[in-house]
Every structure is written in structure tokens, then in C-alpha cells.
Image 1: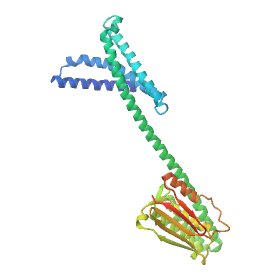
Image 2 (image 1 turned 90 degrees about the horizontal axis):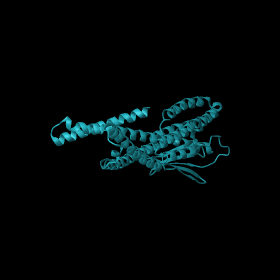
Image 3 (image 1 turned 90 degrees about the vertical axis):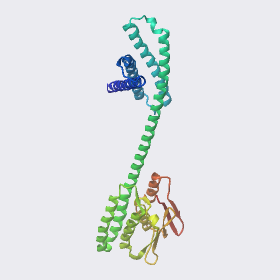
Image 4 (image 1 turned 120 degrees about the horizontal axis):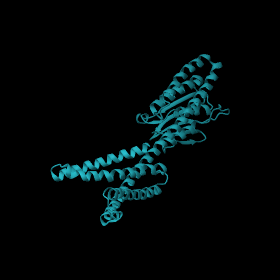
Length: 340
């Protein structure tokens, strides 16, 4: 029912606009306005225009409802075009029958007189032209909206996948942090208490930045240094960090917590002590942040989820076509993170 009244309203608006335009055109050409000059044309305009506009508008809405453009556009175009022409000509014939036979009392043959045949031919040509224009406009509108919707859905899918990957980082970080905390409880309770206090501040940073897909390298570096300082609470002078990053690179961005994950992996997978330190180097080469560390694989690796590097790679894949590169040699493990 809503579609019926919508089509009727649109038909009335179209006829009103056409009538006003016709009256203004007559006024402009004649120089004066006389209702007698435009009364009959206006009545004809509403008599023919209102039913034709309504029938075609209702037909277009119905066919679009049952046969949308995005499913079978070629079939939709031909059915809409032919249906519009057939409905228009049939409606014209009915309107002529009412006007000529029922109102004017003419014979049925008058509907096929030369005057009416020319009328039908002109109406057919106008219908074909208008129907073609309407279908072209509707097709491009639907195509544009479909493309926009597809892009929106794709963007929403990417955001959901990114959020899912980021959600994995949080428990991963807590798991490994609690491992460190657990190791300190018996060794040095005061250090464990300090670590627990600092850990709350670090996790606050994670919560505050969980809605951001990327983070400035400057903030990531500050957070990573704080994380590493907590590791140094336990391992003291066994870890050394060397940083050589340009100011320009510091303003660029990368997926949140990706740098911390690399430092975490370096600490987790390597054996080190005061004599053989774990040396982690952070520097930039062009549009890449390099995180490199010397290798001495542990015999008993701390159990973890194993999702650190893959999480970073997956998030870069969702953010664009830039991909981290990994270099794993006998003595050095190096990861190059693209700066965004």
C-alpha cells in the first residue's frame, strides 16, 4: 500500500511540475497570462500524465522489488523496458477509449483514426526515449549504490578482522607478562611488586589504544621501551637496546603493539646472560622499521600462543599491500616492518 501511495504522489508531483512549466512557457511566449489559453492543455496533461506516471512508477518499483538490478541486470533492463512500453500503450488506449467513446460518444473505430494512430506513434517514441533514460539513470544509480555498499561491507569486514586480531594481542601480552611475574615472585618479591604496578600502566595503554588500527611509531617506541624495561627488571643487564630511528620515521605509523610483539619474541626465544647479552637493534631503512637481534635459541622455550609474528603479518595484509619481511640466519633474526 505504501508503494501505491508513493507512486501516486510522485505522479502528481511530476504532472504538477510539467503543468507549471507549460504555463510559464506559454506566459513567456505570449507576454501575458490567460487561463483560457492553458486550461485545456493543463487538463490534458493531468488526464494523460497522472495515470501514465503512476502506472510506470508503480511498475518500476514492483519490478525492482522482485528483480533487483544487482541480480540479473540484463534481464531487468529488458523486462523493465518492454513492460514500460506495453503498459504505456495499453494505458493510452484505455484513456483514449474513455475520452473518445465514453465521454465524447465517438465510435470505437475512432480510436484507430489517422489522428489517433499518429498520437500512438508519437507516444510510443516518447515512451521509448523516456524509458531508456529512466533505465539508464536507475542502472547507474543502483550500480553506484551497490559499489558503495560493497566497499562499505568490505571496509567493515576488514575492521572486524583487524579487531579480532587485536583482541588476540591482549591475552597474548598478559600471558607472557604473567609468566615473567610468576618467575619473579619467588626470586625477588619486591621486583615482582614493582613489575605488577608497572604492568597495570602498560595494560592501560593497551586499553586506551585498542580502537586504533595503527599507532605512531613514536608512541609505539615509547611503549616498547617501557615494556623492555620491565623485562630488564628480571634480567637486569642481560638485555641491551640500541635505537637509531630518524625523526621523520618516528612520525609514521604501524599496527599497534607490533613492535612490542617483536621484542617479546626476541626475549622469549633466546638464551642470554650478562656475558652474552641479547642485543636488540631498532633502526629505519627508508620506509621500513628494522628490528634485529642476535640469535642464541633457547633449549626450553617458554610456552606461548605462537601468534606474534603471524598476527603482525595478518594485520598488515588487512591494512594494505605492504608486507613485513623476515630474515632468519644462523646468527641474526631480523624483521622489517613497513611504515605506513
